[in-house]
Length: 206
Image (tube, rainbow, N blue to C red):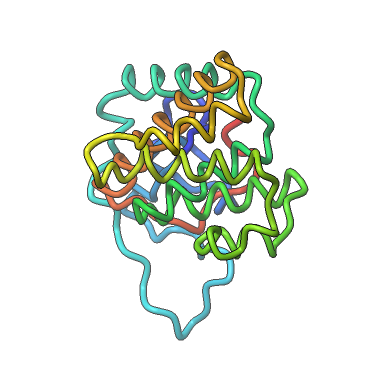
């Protein structure tokens, strides 16, 4: 989740439904889930024959507002200097790996709003087999995102780091690593608290 969220109200911040018509959400970065007892506004694309929307476990930002505000500041600092489209690709991919539905919803919408193509967003889950949709710089960033997010070998492989270093100078690489770290943190809030996707509107938390 990246991140982008309004002042700590989320997790009880008022937002538009998936951003849609205002409904209270819990933030994970900008992630949030309906937290009131009243029924949440229908998620975008929701149909009468769909399964019912689950209730978030915890409106974490309402209970830890200082942490939430600090996360927003960290998110804003981490994104500085990074290409907005590349940043959203990184956030979507990390969120897919962490299975954070709220952040996948949020950052897919933000990417589309930023001019990203549906095709490139759809292909992200199989980016290694769909390399021709992305630039070498984007591929290096996605590889680093996976390595930092999954850490299957207990560390980021030298080859993955070296590949990223070929396309990003040290200041930019530091920002990229920070951005990957921040979205992973948002994802963990979202997944643990089971924040609900579908109620976010592009740019809602900017």
